[in-house]
Structure formats: structure tokens, C-alpha cells
Length: 610
Image 1 (cartoon, one colour):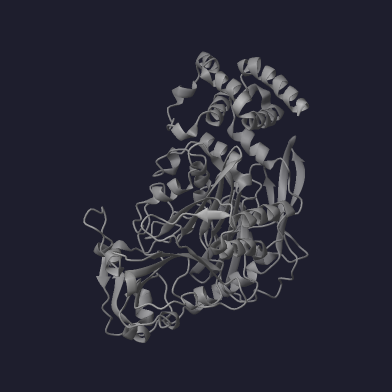
Image 2 (cartoon, rainbow, N blue to C red):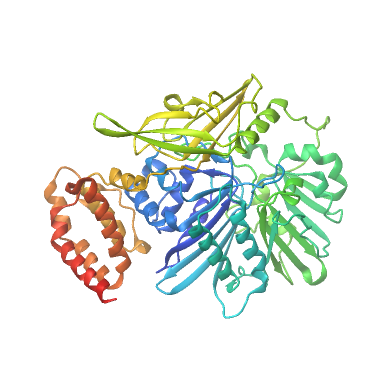
């Protein structure tokens, strides 16, 4: 639970049960890394991969996983917290429709919950899974928690799920833009289903689940209303007013040293033990910095509230998104789950000190906190404050995009223009402020424009984009003196093109070999899929005979079998084939049509009989 090397646990938690496939999922996160998000559908499609190097991940697998899943995913994230990817990737186009930026209409609080609610399907049978995390969808390797709850439909109403249902429904109103009716209906349908889903608690705990949502009501209520003797709090960020709301004086706190320094004088009477993460395990890297070996920080990001009750040796364990801060408990939208264990042999000390059989002992990275001689509260950097104010103003603008199609050298090119429904002329009068923006599909150097040089009348334009570089993801950089911040906004396009994703698909499936491989990935059972990075397995290379011979192997038999037991897969192959034919039919081997035309005739007869 507190091992940053267990990144595969996160990916394994997303994999559908054997024989099932993803039907629909709702995801919430504060911040979002587009490169991380591209990888996650691989897990949802059951691909088994060593993710230690992004360069090793096969582009055809990425395409198959994204093309199959993007319509099944709704991801809500805090507006302005999509990170600028370091690498340009044509596949980002599949992510545009999955991401919904959320805002809290009043004040400066944040959308901060971190969950996955997944529905898996096998014919008419459904399974459900709730994943509650302390981490965002990023490459961060901090110490985090993950709680996985499996669920199935019950014949009875499950009253304990009412808070979870209300949380899911609240996501609709959190969106910065009005959601399409079809998307709202999907969310409402899953919210209604929740009331008949019985989630199993994890082994060793009572049959008890306490779902807690913060920030969705006009006035927050303190969530911990039961009596207890002492509490362990693990939180990377702290506020003394919140810490002092916990009863007792024998409590234990684990946090970052800088946060403890800020609050120590006001909280020391309430905590008998205070620990910080060992400095040797922390560094200054941002949680979203990325390189191909995933060398990232190992700081603290877990949020745990563990309550001990002497009577019956009972413990309550709450985990999820809220830090022990004013923002979390008084305005942010947060989500957490409480577990209970009676007659427990598990307590605060056993969480800190793992069993000897454990591969990793959490206590080894903890140091007892020693207050510095001069422990004055740090003052907020005024420049950083100005940057945050500028970002808030920018995010509050009603920005949108338009596409202008042109012809150049007998090829279609596109100009992308940025517009605002609001007047921006007087919002950024500080001469020190420099704001630039550019499409994430272009490097900053090639595509950037000064955001301050356009008004609601004169749009800002990005010229000569191809169909592959058109995007709704616009990167922004706000700079004052030597300080800066960057982020991406997923802006609405008023006249979006309908065939952009088709073009991405045909761009990647650029020859017969890749078409064959794509078919292979569609048809093979991914429960037993083995990584196939040796090209000869698919007849790759200049030897066309090997490629043609491959079409006569069991792949064609798999297509025939799909006609009887995987009809939806046949329909999907037909859709892909039609898209490629419109672009360049030579990418499809002629041998493929020898059986495909017959299959299509049978499939049409089946449809006519329905």
C-alpha cells in the first residue's frame, strides 16, 4: 500500500476480470498527464507489459486499446491541471473526448477526488470495481495508497452506497462546459446502478464501508463523528486548524518536513509522535516530470486517517484524496472510504512497522521530527501568488476554438483560432506578465503565440496545421520574472471535424503488416496475450511472401470463429476496414478479402433476419 515501486499494482487494478471487457468507467483526478493517460487503456485492454520504458510500448497496441476504449471513458480533472507532455504524440487526439475539466464555481477551492468506478461486461453479465486512490493520473512515484473494491449487482437496495451515488451525480454539474445529453445519461445510468451494487470489503475487515464525499454540499460537515482514543494521520499537506480538530494528545503524525515546520508550534500538544519522510528519499522533482526510465521522486502523497478505539480493539481506516488541510475539509471536492475492523490485531504501530516478512518496512524511511532552532513560518512568494492569480483569471475566461479549412498545394491545411466570449483587454495589465500558448501537437518554438496579443474581437491563430496536428489541447505558459507555470486546457471546438480520429487510425496503420498486426490484436485473447515486439511474428520486413503467408494461418480462422461468438468484434473490424479503404485500400492484403467478403455477406443476412 505504501510502496512506490508497486506501480504495476495500479495497472493490474484496472485489468478486466477474466472473460470480461470494459463496458464503461468514470474517473476523477486532480492533475493529469496525457502520456500516462495514453498508457492506461493498455491495462483496460488486458495487455501485459513492462512499463519501465515508454519507447518499448508498441504503437499498434496503443492504437487498438485507445480506439476500443476512448468512448467508454469519462475522466474528470481539475481545470488547468493537465500537464504539458514532453513528447508530441498523434494519439492524444483519442483523449480529447475522454477528458472533462471540472471547476468549483465559487471561491478558489479545487476538484481533488481520485477514483475509478468501472463496469465490466461479459455478454449480459456485469461486474463492478471501485478504486479509491491518493494519487493522480501522472508518472509520480510518491508513496501512495490504493484501495480496490469488487462489486456485483444485488437484488436489494444498498443504502451505504447513497453517498457514492450522489458523488457520481455531482460530477455532471462540476463540468466547466455543458455535457452532451448522451454523456449525462451514461453517468446517470451508472449512478442509478450503484444503489444495487454490493461491494466486498477487503480481507480481514468487517462488512462495513463508509463512503465520504467532501465539498459537494454548500456547507461541509466534519466526517469523523465517532468516538476514538487516538489517531494516526498521514498527509503530505497540513493545516493546524484541521489537525487540532482531532481529539486526544497521544496522536501520531507523518508528513513532509516543510509542512510540519509551518504548523509545529500550533499542533505539538496534540501529537506524541511526529515523523517526516527521510530526506534521502525525497528530491525536488515535480510529480509530473517524465523521462523514459520513470526516474521520479519518492516523496509522500498518501492520505490515511487511522483511528484506534480501545473498546473491542476497533480501528477505523479512512483513505482517499483529502489532505489534512483547510482546503480539503472546507471547500474542495474530495472522496474517501472508511473501513472498520473489530477485535483487531492491527494498530498504528503495525502500519508504521511492517511485518518482518514484508519486502519493505515503511518505518525505514521515517525520521522522528526534530524542530529547527528557528522555526518561523515561511511567507508566501509574492511572484508565485501573482502567477496563481493570473492563472485563475485565464481559466475563468470562456475560451473556445474554431477550425478554418484551406487548400495548399492540393492538400488540406487548417488554421486553428482561439477565441474568448469575455473581454480580456484589461485582465492582465501587469507589464511583467508574459502569457504564451500553443497546440500540444506542436513544439512551443514552432507554434507559440502571445496570449496577450488578442482580444475577443481579434482571435489568436495557429496556422498551417495538418489533420494530424489539429487538437483541442492548448498549452499555456504564464511567466513573471524568472517564475513560471505551465498547463494544458482542453478547449471546446465550435466546428469540430468528424473524421479526425479516422485519420489518426489510418496514419498509424500505414501498411499491410500493421493492418495484420492490428487484426491480430483485435482477435487474440488478451487474457493470455504475450508481448510481441519481435516483428517476424507478424511477417514484418521486406519479405512480402512472409506477410501473405501469415494471412493463411489461424488468424483467418479466428475471424470465422468471431462470426459465431464475437459478432460485435466483426462489426468493429468492418468499421476499421471501411476507414482504411477510404484512405488507401492497398494497406489491406488482397488475401484478406478472399474470406472477408464472404463473412460480410453472412453478417448482412444475420442483420436482415433480426
